[in-house]
Length: 408
Image 1 (tube, rainbow, N blue to C red):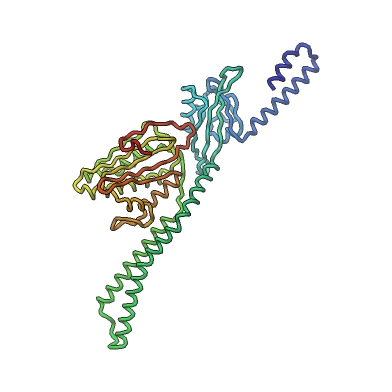
Image 2 (image 1 turned 135 degrees about the vertical axis):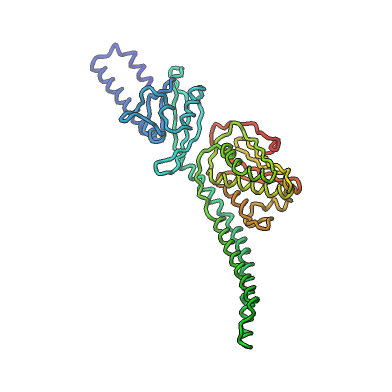
């Protein structure tokens, strides 16, 4: 197109009016063809000038971006692009690109649709160059919702692989109370038959009550086992959205700190200053944080019943991944125990269900992350959570906190 226009401009003085009219018609058709292609692209495109006022926008961009445009008009009057975007995070990203003169950058955002569903969009900014001069920017918007949903589905399918071991554990848990119920029912039946063959009177009330108490206790145990099993195998309905984990952690820490303070246990946080956003379900993430905190409190108070314990929560980014560490100076675990802490129904507590850390593991996997434990008997325990940073322009941050130095 550019070569054609240059050639025409060189010969324009030699052309007849009819030839000029023909060229104008040809250029008009070519321009209409390019406009049709621009409007029909599935990728959203917004062209802005150096002042970041919108020059062109296609239909896909209008669908993907929450734009506050004038009724009946496709272009705003004198407003810059971030001033007409209805999402605060996207507007802040575009404004930062303009003010800091950032180009060739991209970021991912979550948007709520009219049906309360979550849409994931990838937005990139590239320079618009004409005649070797910067004349504006090209904002590209891609809908990556299907890709993210496929990743979530894949991780949910992977969790099904652990159901075999879980079912085996449930079968073992159910077998014991069923055996106790069977034995005590047989004892009552035997006593009843013996009395009917003799004086016909019922067995002593104390004997019957004791047997029935055992039966009721074991039935309650069975019911609890079944309820816990349903909780463990129930698919996690995670509503993943981009969120700042450290901001959430600060909220959660303020929630459980009073309980730690009451038991004279200190809570120290070392969170990264410029934390990246992650794909998280805020409710499930809270469950993970609170669960790890409760486990730490139990271990600390067991070792320091009169106070003096410490829980340290530290975060940072290493090698393109977000790292979160929970470190306590509690009783700790031996190697064999630490190797089984994420197994369903494995617990060292007399009243524990053995499902808390199993659910924590399941949630972290739903976030496409990983969790590991390092512990030493009598020296404390450290849980290390690793979560992927979804943004393409990942910022490598220096990790904060002595507990994390030298660890992956």
